[in-house]
Length: 316
View 1 (cartoon, rainbow, N blue to C red):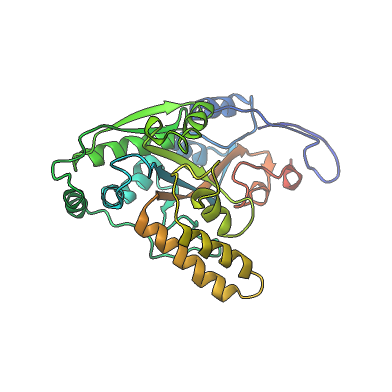
View 2: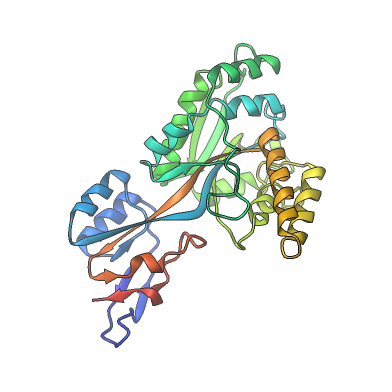
């Protein structure tokens, strides 16, 4: 972000220019060069340097944005729940948070992020390679899967890239080979949209961010997993029982929130057992700004991970 300063009594910026810069290293360089004044996305290894430099301020805040890996449930052998469970138990979640995200996240527990109503803390898959191998053997693959799985992620996202490499290395330990394909978001999206019609021609695994449009579990559960949500249900998952449960839960949020919460847990447990997707981490948002910008922490809201509320900034 670039700011044009003003000298008004409220000290807020008069003009707030948003620049789309996909590469984290480029954002870091431009911030140091004074070409931008706030960066959303810098390499983890640069953070300590910015934090030690009095010319910059770094803000860390929990976010309702999370990262998941969606699984193509229509494409063999991933149409077998046992295979999907094997994959879920072969992912080293703590390593992914530590190595891919530099600790700036927390291991996910279900598709609803930590801190949001409807989140439960007992829906994390254990990392257990022996269990994963047993599940594959039960599914008829004692020596691993006989084809290579394709994993796509958004090119330029260093966190997704690192997570993809860790997942690939760990799945190889149970006999699952993975080909990683970085793609532009437009290419990734266009490919995935074909999955409802021709699931065998699209990706197997899709690394994907989600954040809320309304403060309700339904925005995660309906959009990513309801059978009528063809745009965002890129797992191609269909479960009429699940659909009915979240529809009822949403209708009860206002009149009977305790019952709604019970139903949302039931729905998430179905997802946990069926594994159409694997939640990886719940984000901790990072913003870095020049020290002249004050009140940055109040300009960040966990519901809006890509937004800076410029009217909350104070320029000195």
